[in-house]
Image (cartoon, rainbow, N blue to C red; front, side):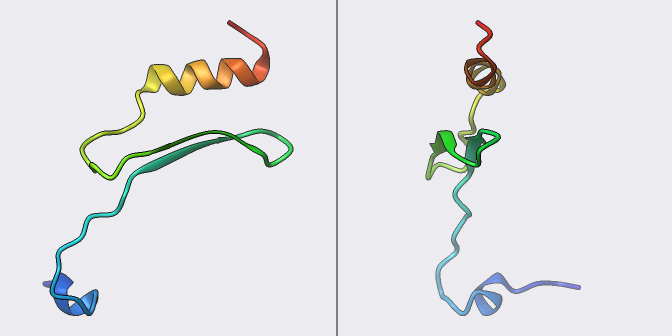
Length: 59
């Protein structure tokens, strides 16, 4: 099955989704967010671990 994205999106523009990452605590509060319109750039795993360590009180 071939998908025509222009027809599927009802647009004449080719768009990429914006990658995002959120660190949410046990009380459902967003403690850190990362959003970058460049879909090639993602949050580094080391930064994710560092943010999780902040939540747990580890350094």
